[in-house]
Length: 102
Image 1 (cartoon, rainbow, N blue to C red):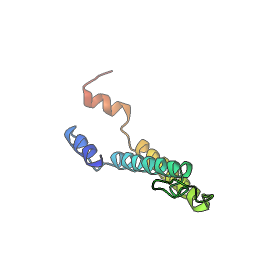
Image 2 (cartoon, rainbow, N blue to C red):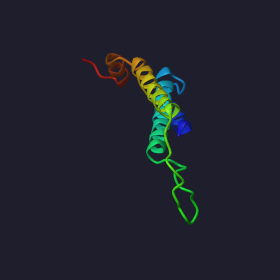
Image 3 (cartoon, rainbow, N blue to C red):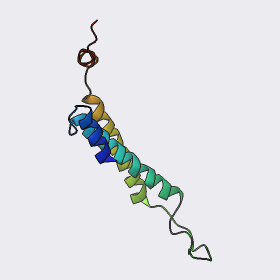
Image 4 (cartoon, rainbow, N blue to C red):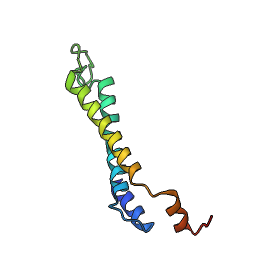
């Protein structure tokens, strides 16, 4: 997915390693990580014995480290989005590149 994004950016004539692309990549990867952590917090992987019986094996608690992992993924998501937003082109430069005059 990241490689496809780099190829599309290069095809549009933009630098694929620009700060905006880096921030967006970080935000997308952090969003995927946060989604996986939320899924595992809500659906514990080891609360049943598995196999044909699916017998419960006991209470599974999500400890502090699970929630800290979720918070850190969300912080990385926000940091990547802010980094990408800070490095976008001003509207005037985009219009000049498109050939639009005011």
